[in-house]
Image (cartoon, rainbow, N blue to C red; front, side, top):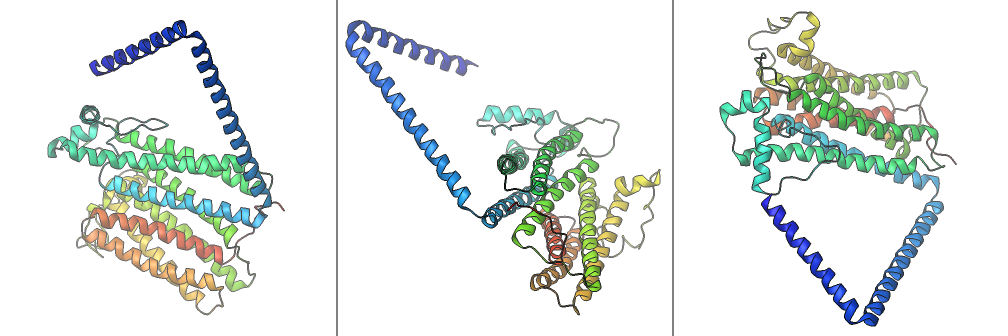
Length: 424
């Protein structure tokens, strides 16, 4: 406060000094003052006119370029923009996974729609640290193990970086979408998708804070460590995957249009590919429950659960449905079953595709999906046996996104319903 008052007084003294100099110049040399003032205003008007002319010229140039582009080139620009958005979402999902694994998500105890800069001095860091010390995570967990200010800075920057990446995605998606929605050469189907992308981005930001807020609520009667709600965590991750997959599918529809075959074998394979993609999404969301409950630390053995094939506490909660979402043993058991089922589905899909004459890209996608399926299971088992190291768990989560990408690509290459995205 004292520094602020000192700076304020210094600024006021400078302003008063400039006002006295201006008054002295006006009284002593009135003609010189008038010529100087007129010259200054004239230069301002000329600069503004030049800037306005440059802006008008640039706008006309961009409009002429846009008119000279044919619909195919415009479509490719839109598709590459969407692929860039997919890359940003994938990066944010990875950072979010590491944020959860390092228990950094509750380090920021407030939320601002437009965000705020990081603390710039020791005093501001101390204020942030004091806010964190009032959170349930500090009271019931961290206070026993201790934490230095430098350790707090690491978890704070993890959460801050995750939030700022989300805001970058918002600007990257919403601003161009608002412009493209006014373009007459876009079909209504693509406009609806762009509006949906913008809505998902805004909803994702609000859902993220709603999720964090659940971990900042104090529950003294609970014997569990403070953490965000696994339901909200799965919703947050599911919304991110939905945004990623829909943008990916739209860009594939534009860049790599695939022809659909009516042969019975291809129809069956296409349906199986859709089922594999859906099962991959469900398996990834079950992984969010595993991460939210730290269920990966319950049974660190494979293939058995300790010395049992079916653990004795599988359905120990009442009512029964709670076990599938709140019982750590059941959540891990379900994730294992889903992962194995997904691998079986991928293998069946791959073997069924062997005798068929597939399009070249579809064959590549099927082989890549088969390899990634086995790799993902290997990553999951290794993560379990090594007691969930952060780097390996992050690779396992990113592997689920790669698996979903390949499954979506394969389903697209096997043929899908064509939607008119551009007007001629």
